[in-house]
Amino acid sequence: MHEVIEKALKEGRYPTEPECREMLKEYGIPVLDYAIARNEEEAVKAAERIGYPVVMKVITARGEHKTEIGGVVLDIRGEDALLNAFLRLSSPMGVLISPMVKGIELLIGAFQDEQFGGVIAFGTGGKFAEVYEDVAYRITPVDAETAMEMMKETKVYRILTGFRDVEPRDVKQIAELLANLSKLVEENPEIKEIDLNPTFSLPEGVFVGDARFIL
Image (tube, rainbow, N blue to C red; front, top):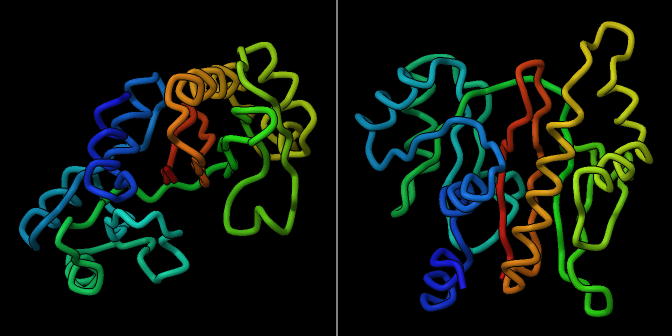
């Protein structure tokens, strides 16, 4: 059992987002740069290193959607706004600070199905993901070739390959991410649900912007 999962189960909680991000990186899944700040000085230094604008999120171990509990502040562009957000979001675990990026938002996730086992999901992400319902699924194991077939079933794939003024993205890198996620799911069946929405597809690559594991 992975040490992140073992520690969370022992403490009767879910993994925090920083723990999820570190585990994703171990499996070759790229995440946006981030820092953890436990006081105002650390928050200022983190934002200066990452570069404004930034996003600030509360760190919890309860598995909530942070946007639904008011735990996210977007597009912070200066120190005053940063300190105000820190005071609002500060928790015993600190806050997570990450760059504010704009790209094609993808829904990437996984869950354990009682009948089929691990399932990988890919589609249109962001806050309107449930409205668009543009999602394709595959049972694990999923390799890069299978992931590419799954991606082609979605509407967002057309955008990823270049649409009007949108620059084409590296779809092979996204397929590789899905294959690596499949490996994570296969090797860690204790994780019942993985939510990586949004994951951002940028001209320079694909990066997970939010990570949530349910045990």
